[in-house]
Length: 156
Image 1: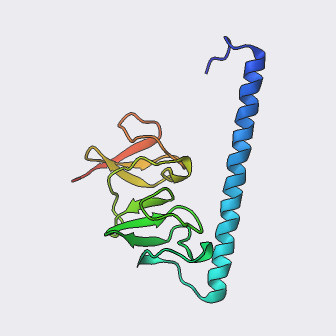
Image 2: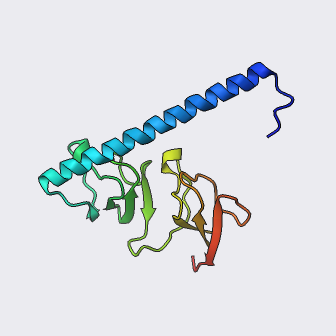
Image 3: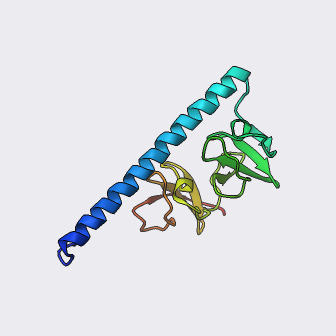
């Protein structure tokens, strides 16, 4: 990016804003990691197994909610939880619709950054299967995208 046309005070403001946002994201990531660890300790103490294609039921509390990577069924669709202690209803933010067979499904635009596609996650768009090249990928897969790599043709 060319910043030569900007006054120094605006560049400093941009740097400060970027540093603040980066700190906020790092705090959120650290919090989510700690929350996932606490939920796992809770499950271990009670002998609760990860959810593996169970029908979603509204949880009584956050620790009993789907955890990170738990898989649930809701309204005849399958979802993977993208966060620990997920109190959201599957189909909303915090879940990725998935195929029970493990094959990619049609790309669905993430509603927020933390719902973005993870590095290595696959999605189909326009009959082509793409693989995400970065974490928290909210970009639409296209043949010329620097964020996605075309991996194969699809029957979708």
